[in-house]
Image (cartoon, rainbow, N blue to C red):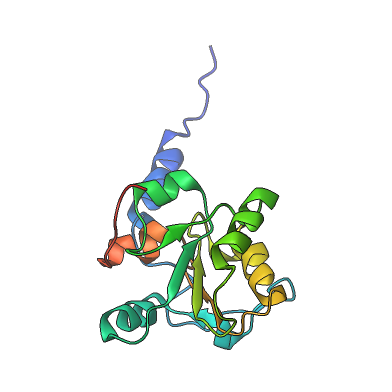
Length: 165
């Protein structure tokens, strides 16, 4: 019988490396500039950092409307206090629910959208929802910048959350 070369040490080293990176700060870097791509319907001034939203919420400034446009199970698991789940931005039903939620609001009302289901640059929900608000004429539509996901960029930072519907 010919002995086969053993690979477990290499595999084990790879697993240990992955485990050591788990929970470490993102390689994207929180302070790095946010890249705006041609597929993005927003400009830099439309993007709101989590700490800026938290400061606004604590400041006593006029309340903002905060709409979660991600998946309902994520909203139920934890969401920004006072936010409303309006439906998934990738689905026509979710877009219709968003339109209904903002109907009757002044066009200069600050509306903050967030999803947080996955990394910002591949999120299927935030772009269609934001584009809808802009098409409806909302001049103060904002998107909450969650580069990795809601859990990492909001919850694990100790920002306030609520659970349930």
